[in-house]
Image (cartoon, rainbow over all chains, first blue to last red; front, top):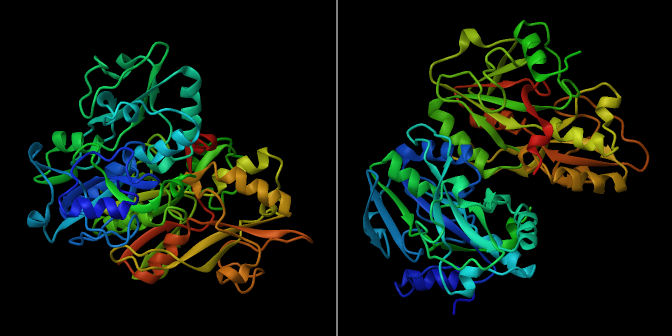
Length: 259
Length: 259
């Protein structure tokens, strides 16, 4: 399997790896991708500033430049993500393995923190990750928690990821993840899913269902899929993202993002 | 004296209060102000994203709108700061008590975290603040630590504020301020000032000199005056800021910015 972010990116670049990245290239930072035309970049950067829990910005490219500098040495965001989603005017129109052919001179990429980064800290402290135990992608849900709008980005709902824990471990998970504010930080909710507008915990909007065992409560973290929902609502002419769970994997270590 | 941010802002608005704000309206958040034309707003927001220690963004206004919503309920950034500085093409051209007459429809304001906010945590933990003991503004210095550039904002030097402590208290100060990442967080340096390009600790570039007593070492935090130096270097046609130490004071409590 892939030992480093670079190995995983190279496999994605060759089109060989198109799966979700939870638990892969262990120890290396993972990130959400958003690509927008420069004319929408300010509104999005402001949307991220106003919604730092779901949208912690780790790196922003210069207009037209698809190469990273902060999270990885000269990675190419057009090819190095396992799977991409293309949104046009708020509609998901395509899913593809690379975006080189449709890259434009006015495109700006944003890489946002991902909860897969703090998962290592949870494992290292002896906590479980149910979706990894069950070989699945983490479950993600649309909530009724409103994001703040910014320019043409409307106040759209926050997306959350969920991991089930016994109450004592839920407390530990709060303590551990607060130390990682740049990758969503502490949870936004725990317990009754209906309090944040999730009607059926068995039916995630993205990712896979996982088991919740007797005595466990669901714990919810802000999720970097939030901008994809914002795109559906706010309808930029074009926006490209990673497919949920199919993250950009960098060269920097997870623990570099610990406070 | 002023018990709340609102009282201080009202006095500033009436033109009665034009002094520095260290130690005033105790318990209320203080912030650095930057005002730029909208055409420079993206470059600045990106500069802030790439330099989060000196430039933690707490609030951004909508174009033309001088009223705050996040840090204070409907404060007016044109009148509510004690003293303003006007920079034109990289030159400090004026210092004035209000900017209503020169406000423009395309102006965007940014409020950035200020170390005065974590000073309360230092006091509450029994640490001293030499500049307050001596009734002065905090000393601020230009360093040789480069900021990352962003668009037209060149890689300009980081500005730091300095507080002297005995080594044991310096350690405590690191522990306490790391809990406040949105107001500069932990220090960027401690000890020998020359290692960060400060030739003479007795001659701050902004604010006032303070005493360093036997056994004490200077401890340096990233400072929100950094954008003013960036403006000198990068020469936007117009940029308006607070005068160093003469901060915007909000309605939110310092401890709301603790992690």
